[in-house]
Image (tube, rainbow, N blue to C red; front, top):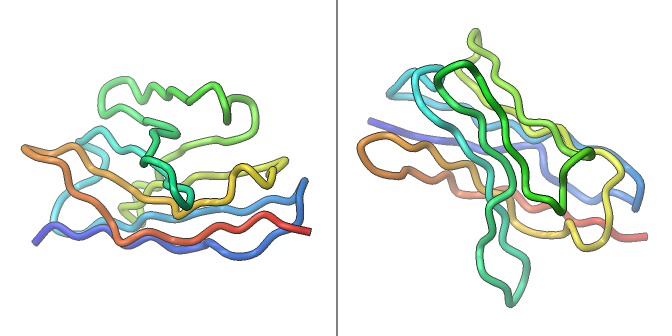
Length: 115
């Protein structure tokens, strides 16, 4: 059974950092494209970052480029999102998505950036 479990969210001051985790089960995350999305209150869900299965390429939304880093941990079957220089506009629920024969989503983890 495919499952994605996100964690690591919380309340952080502007300029702070957080690392989100997405632990996969039921499949090997190394073999598939993995993504992070986020959804702020009253807004549509938006794509944040991708790590590919082949050649481990990464891609980022312009709004997070240079501040966020997506990476894999094969030993934990996990994908991370390291977030630095956080801004209030980064406040959202962050979701992990696995692109298998269809898309699978986690339940999300809340990130709040506020002073």
